[in-house]
Image 1 (cartoon, rainbow, N blue to C red):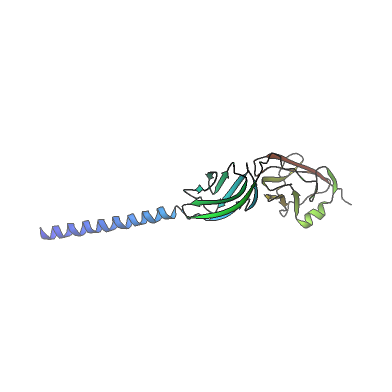
Image 2: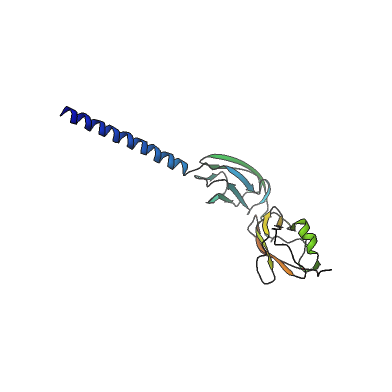
Length: 217
């Protein structure tokens, strides 16, 4: 009987140890599933902003328990969007989340009521003809500029709407298309830069810049 009791005690002790090990493993898995979120950038990063503007903050991982000292914040994935309306004048803004905090400083101006306007210029402008494709292919980039800081996307397409495959991005007041090898511009072809952008106040426009490359010499 004593031997049976001793064996039962050893068995129960072993099961307890295994359950503790399993529990620790589960805790470690839970911790691994919630990586720390670090601040990456803010758009605009600082400077002037309209009273009805928007501030977009990006993290390297999805933040939790996000709060702001001024305005209203909405979090989707790794992005926090902060809206006002903000009071005119200096705007010290602090954003706090479970893993840290970040101070941002702005100057609030009158509400923005105007759409961003595409500047006539850059690498090409709407309506250009006889564009040299070799020169653009050699530089490997097409740029267009806007009157103010914007966000959004642009693509390079054929006249029929097919994506040519260049890499498009919008940063600051500039839209950039970068050449992908094997996707060079061709002679005697109509291309269209298309996309949608918006400024910090949410004013949006559709981008459409058409240009035609020249024939072979």
